[in-house]
Image 1 (cartoon, helix red, strand yellow):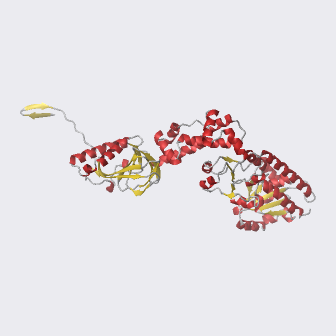
Image 2 (image 1 turned 90 degrees about the vertical axis):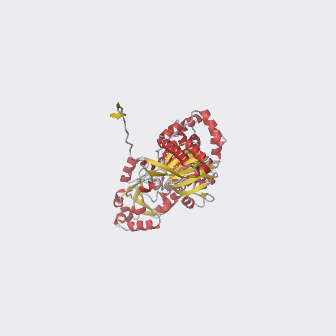
Image 3 (image 1 turned 180 degrees about the vertical axis):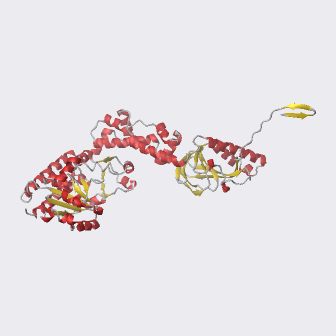
Length: 550
């Protein structure tokens, strides 16, 4: 460019930058300082304008948009208008927090942009976490100079806003600043489930934090907020609980148990176990096997057969086994943890069909052991006997039961022909029909009384082994029917009425066994599969069969 100045011609270069027109300014509107005593709550609040929530002292839980986040000194959260928040103090000291409210002003008209929907996208949506001690210091300086701030002149106000802009920029620039709170809690909860599944592996806090995709420090604080324990203490609790289960359920050496549950060596396992229980693993095994307080889900019959009265079991089993269950407390699978804790159990036995979350919850009360409900009655009884130190009693019951079954067969020879076949059915809810395999009623028919399974049932046994039952179409009942047929109607009075209607139809009435008066309808209580029921049903089957001569 050439330019003439005072009669002389000069040359110079110029550059110009055109700034984008989507710039925004931020105007501080108010500052709120508050505190909560340990365990206190700050109440529910609707954020009306943009807000920087930051902790000045202590530790507390901020729930933003329904999602919880643990925050400590210097940590905070950027909140958008319309967000509902709740505050609750945690820890042992007073929780002090600040809320710095600000408006977003459009460049064009100097008006709050949020009201016109012009707020920049990076300020809207989900809450965003940050760690900014400088913001806490800035706010505390403002509070200390409250009088000056409220009556500040133009230059001082300009300086305050300039510093605020710098801090806000620093927050938005943080790598984790744009991570939504909503994913953090869920991510930590997923790692908790991961710990329950992989407790036997070598796990570190850094490894778990990476899995949650958040920083180690934030991961630890979130973990404490959710569980009340540090990650490593929580992992040790899981390992100790699993070790207790193995100490009671197996005769494994301590070194094997230590390795199986994730401890580096037997010495460290012994030390941590004694710290947690006051007993060495060997002492725990010997002491607990002498006198156990057991909560038995489903397996009350097995416990009573072994001569052990659990402290609690399910209500329907208590009713089924009266008067033998007198004095045993009622507890069902939906019971609150506090109710189970009040029973002070040493062991909780369950059938292993409940969700992992359920067993994880119970393990906070006592070691939990799953006994497979699909096992036959002898295997289940022996497994439970090992848990409670009653192996001799289990062997004695099995021998006694087989002797009783043999005597029953002898007495029925006059009534049951050699090689007769029999089949058991259960008519279930909504018209579902099942044929029994070698378990439940099938155990009594085939193992105890010596009936042969009809060909179709024999084929199922060859294919599926020791199965409890198999669903069949009601119209196919004749294919599975033996020389004698036994039916249980389960599911309450309404379903029994449906079963009676079906039995009055041709599918049941046309069976040869029905026409020959060799069909038997049994009460629902005979559908259980436990030692007490198996002993009692022998007498009931003998009574029914001896009433019908060949």
